[in-house]
Length: 397
Image (cartoon, rainbow, N blue to C red; front, side, top):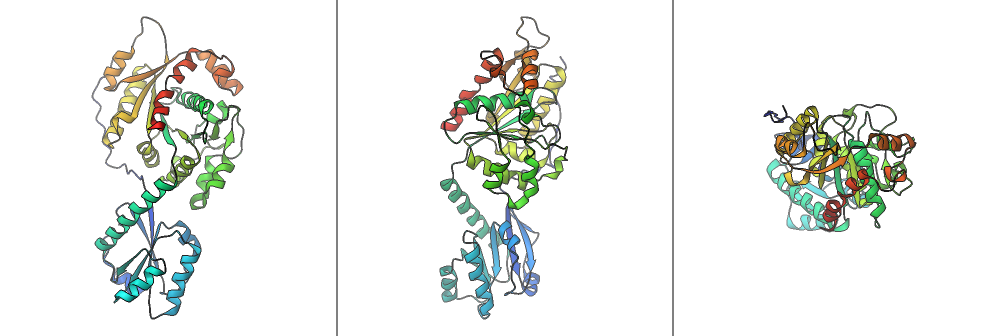
């Protein structure tokens, strides 16, 4: 068939950004010069350097964007201590590491009473600071997990363009929305250049994922809800941009923040991803609970699907989380490529197949509705519904 060839694919340049952290380091010029750093990254945290006097005012935007603050404190300067109090008052949830020289037990106790998370000695040593930051990050993760139950994240990939992945994503999301009695289901169209999910559902909102990307660090739940459109069957949708925008207009940190907020708002978040890979798309797939890879039973589609599977394997993404869907399968006895042959060629089972009914799908797209609005009982609807137990099982677990 030509699809079982061994394809070599290396991916050393991919960078998975699963838990992007921003550490704001505020030191005087003398202490910044004395600091012992090899680079500006500590573990999974990027360190943003701000050189200023120990009593200088810190920009609010910098504090808003920070996950952790490392702040130089001069006990002999009242204004330096006042700055600490002001930051604690304006950003009560921001973990602060106090950086001081010649500390003593009474001073450390005083700073801890004022809400400082930890104290580190100056001059700063990267190894000591890395240990403290890792501990705080672990505490933040545990605290967030206890506070907020995150919804299931489902990514829909396409082997190549035109295999019907958006149709699968919209109908799967619609089926989930109809059976959901909790916080709801959200479909996010992340195909920034050719996304059609909104059009397939008859939505015409002027707001889109582009508005969330443009918001940067200012994004919050209220902004997320303002961008969401709601379809007739109760599905919440964040559509692709009206205008084509480059994939590199977004970065991993932005996308992860958007998805994190969506998972806090909904029981299920379904991502319709572009066909081209970027670091942020790979990061989102790695974060997903379930990954659907949509392919057709053609040599070109299966060849690219195999390359996609190899890329995901190279990144250490769990094989068991990836489920291959064969779309537009002709239900006839003799086919050029059958499901068993395709599974063997991929080296991965094809767990789901979807019947080919082009006229029905085209009619639904033209009317901006789901297939079940035109034909209540269709083979495509039955095939899509067969995937729901996997998703509800993952949610229950």
